[in-house]
Length: 479
Image (cartoon, rainbow, N blue to C red; front, side, top):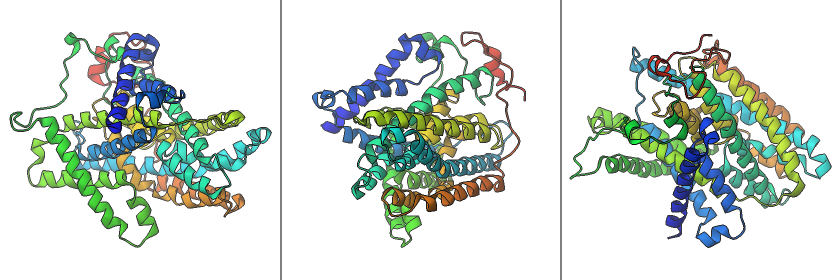
């Protein structure tokens, strides 16, 4: 019952977000997703003493629901075939997706190496007056690059050693700030791109888009095709059943991977969402080979991806339990601003240099992933590509394979926090590995000339303008 009550309250917060966006015009003007609005309300509600217990909400269950939907979202992305743009062959789409995945994965890896060094020196400088040990700055990549789940997990490991008793709470607080950065900066950035015509499949910036819900006369788009007879099985149930089958296969594949006596393989085999995405790719290929894929609707599958993303974002906010960390919040905020600015500069510079036609969507996805989680990156992509027609959302799943070089120092970060390694040993290792990731971006040809300019002309100057030409032609700003 607790799981159902908790899940239902996540849904209620989603509805709260929908209502608030519809009635508060500034929220619509910045295209803030209902999941983020509802998540922030849920975060506040969950941290008012006694409220969660009174309502029957279990914060730990919130975290479990988030993890479950996190896995399902990646499986759903893997099952969805990316539509080919006009004139593109399947091979061209695959090449484009591989390049984007490699570029974003390696860029994430570089940030994972650079940000703990920046965090350490920021806390050393800003935190001295507040008696905050500089080692707390090393926790920043667990939050900004990995999200609340990993923050709590690694934080608890560090707390167990006894040297950093507030590691978990500090890391989770970083993740809250990271989520806010992701959307409070990412959504306005998406809006700027829409106005300048940078989106590959731009939406008309109509009043309906701004308020986030369509009136009956505006409800012209369908959610998917009916591929099964409803008297036999509902098409949504059919698609969800395939997701469930893939999830079960993933668990067995994961067990086989964990039997391999290799620490590196085991560490990545332990990431269920990572294994699930690639199992989904195999399932999709098998379905195509045996002629079953024609009964599976990609448009409807994209809706499932969007649904899981919405629920997990709200759940992630509600799962975060902040505690009184006193005056430490001041150096923590200052450090997060510095790391956020560094991350933003990296994403803006490299995002438009990956190559091919959806670099704007990749930039948004990269920013969301580098300050929150991959699903938060997908949520930002959905602002400008609501039907997930570009390869950018799928690349958010496959990029995990190319994050591996950046995560090689996880154990070293924990060792420094636990007093088992000197910070002077870690710094050159982290900076060196970060540089290697940057070099690899060039090697895999994901560092090219810019494909779009932020200085381009405004195609749709006001969100209430009639932008039919903008929508129909897909005009992109001049570089």
